[in-house]
Length: 290
Image (cartoon, rainbow, N blue to C red; front, top):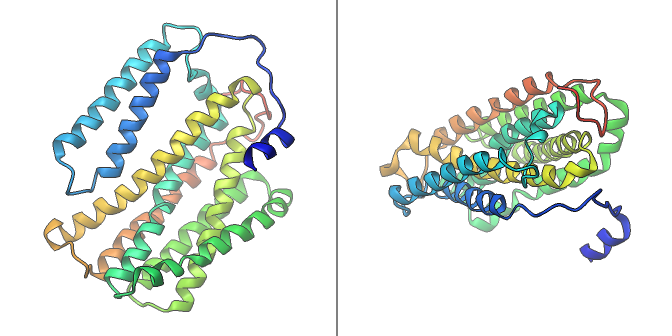
């Protein structure tokens, strides 16, 4: 079904002229990114040895440095440095990473809180996240209206502020739990978060020329995956720092979740600052303004 939709509705973009595939760069990027994602995924796991974690970090570092050296020596690297000269794409990529450091921790922290602090079952904790999906679906219906009636910077900043405020409400709910308030906050968190992702993605891709779309989507997708992985790892590291490895159990204190979510709620403000740096006069599908 997905292949049919792509074939039927996506424009067929033809490359101006063929060029050789950068196989060595592909290997460096693939191995390096796989090692980086593995490192973030096991960063807080006590079952994985520290030596293996450092080995994954070293493999990423070696592959990244090798790729940078390789890319500077060939005409058509698999990921072009020209992407980072596009101011809007650069800002949105960093902002997307920052936002996901905060928002991606919530599907990890809230079910964990409900199970370890309140004693809920995994099924009950999972059902509490239905409002997040409903909020995300509603945002898809509202995004056109928001784009048509609000300029870019205000809607990005207001969405970031909404995401931050809902996380603050959820942080306080860990100490003063009320199901209705938590459900409403999760619904709004899904609404603002989904809106933010859609708007950042649109802003990032809107300035890419056809010849850079493939490279841009590759690097942007990598940033999304890294941001989500590191967001969960960051939340876990903060939790371990607060309660200690020895005290990790099925009865984690509510105050620890309160502090970790409060810390995460301030991260979107960094992204909001980045949104103020976007050039309003950068042309769509033009990438020469810095």
